[in-house]
Length: 452
Image (tube, helix red, strand yellow):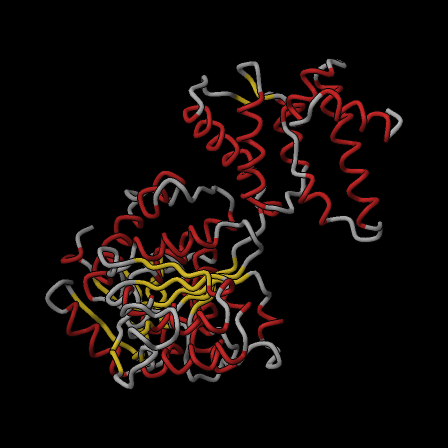
């Protein structure tokens, strides 16, 4: 169905929103009906058929559930309406909006929206209603965010929806997750799909900056501001002007650094070291940390006012062990990547290798998987990758053992690794030593040490 033939119902208790949507759509659609009170839904749906319903997620109503939008979405379904429902949500309710998709909503839009984006969303909902629009798949995800960020699991589909919806806004984003989960890829994907995509994307590992370097690196300095300031330097905020600034490991900065950062974010201007002249900056801020949000909420560690400033929307990136068959999808991607890099035929995984990958807990997440597959491709002599080719990082394995002394942990890891490699090469000491990066003499010493 074309938009010009569509009848649209808009339900929102904000009169300004109703007016804005009515003015936008009055020349685009056949008819636009607006309503402040969602409790009139049954009467409206009994009186008239609608092709699309734009439904707010938060009302000051008697229902008082905290997520009124989901309540009224279910009512629309109970009233047997065939309308495609598009939820209207604020930044802070993105998670609820994603949940609404599972409850039957066709899509959602985030306030404040771009008019063109709203019209496209309505058109897509109409196409989907007639079965002409395929559901979101990995292939369409690739077209949204590029090939590096892969996933078919439900938990990743939720993240892809979030990226698609929040990227065109200027909302500040906080990305949470363990080390190695791909937080930097999420940040880059948001920038690439934003209205700032053609502007600068500047990444800073703020957790690695010392107290003395923090201000100079982020805000810049004038020549002579300190001993090594031999020339004027633009800080990362100015370098990202008009674009996106990604502050990685934000949870590791000191309270003093947090105060400096908060001042810049509030005033939207920086003052270079050695000057008193404020320089306005226009950036979209994305932050990431492996520190859980509950720990960040401890004011002895992190300022709450800064959390609110950087966390308009949060994205929780799941650990690899919670992504199911995404492990195999990523493993195949890395196998192809490194087979091409090292000029080898693309290697496939046998059944036991796949089983081994799925049963491993990956404490190092995607980063560990990547290094595991690269090493396997390099060392493998065949065209297939077998379970014995997959040797997981002893560094990551050691971090998961808590009760044994460190020295015993390391010894056990080393012994098990040597046994595994020797077994792989059927007792051939020369080949085992080569794979372990040892001389034959050094390997023999270790065999004696561990009574192997």
